[in-house]
Amino acid sequence: MEFTTFPATTIGIAKLSKRYRRGITALSNIEVTFTPGITAVLGRNGAGKSTLVRSIVGIDTRYDGTITFEESGEILGRAERMRRLGWLPQSFGYPARMTTRDFVAYAAWLKGLPRDSDEAIDCALDTADVASHGRQRLDALSGGTLRRVGFAASIVHAPSVLVLDEPTTGLDPIQRAEFHERLAMIGRRSTVVLATHILEDVAALADRVHVIEAGELVWSGTAVGLSRAGGNTAVDSETLRSGFRSVVGGELS
Ligand SMILES: Nc1ncnc2c1ncn2[C@@H]1O[C@H](COP(=O)(O)OP(=O)(O)OP(=O)(O)O)[C@@H](O)[C@H]1O
Image (tube, rainbow, N blue to C red; front, side, top):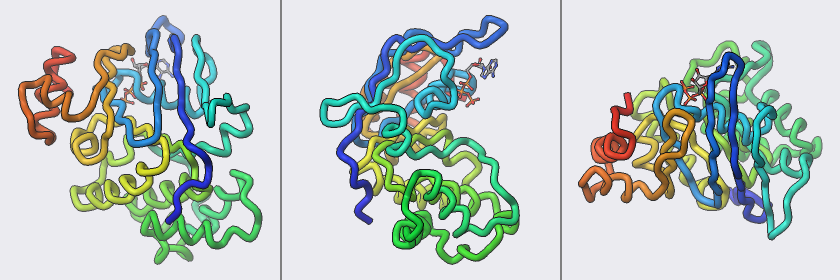
């Protein structure tokens, strides 16, 4: 699949802070740039990952600071930004009686693709490995399949920015490995922001890692760098866990 036809898109985040009501500071002065490739935002439950990605995708707009999408040196306006963006939330609502194919076609329409976008829809269904479920109703699908349908919907318009919030939670090891393969392919061309607390995701996919703790960005580097911070050279879940422990001063989970 020729994944995106857009030029490379960069996300610039400056002085991003977010306070919820009741005085909870979810993000504190975040400064980070996301470039093409897969960047993991790693943190424990409640660290602020969802708040960060919800701000990036524009669901949450009440924050201090700025988030810009830039392409060939130009800052994109809101409409252009939305066209370039694919978003897979932790869980998503769906019309139960709709079929898989219609759901992905609907996502294509929402993103402004022309009516005759069968090729793009088929391509997304294939990439997410749900083509064989095209005619099934969404309420007949298993949780793992439904997640893949959400993934197909998030990529149907070939976004240059793909943001995923905990995409592999609840998947078994085989499903997770398959998902890694699909995402790795997309990460070759697009800017992928992967919020996760699952170290297998980081080990398998991440070109870069940002560690977030209590709303602050506490460490940035590569997966190798994070493993080294824990005194190891190999990169796997356990070496990353040691690295996380060294840079955060506590266990991931
Ligand atoms: N709507 C809300 N109102 C008040 N506080 C919130 C709200 N959403 C999140 N928080 C708080 O903000 C902080 C960051 O939460 P956030 O969901 O961004 O973390 P997270 O790293 O994504 O965790 P998880 O993986 O559990 O979703 C937490 O202290 C959380 O309790």
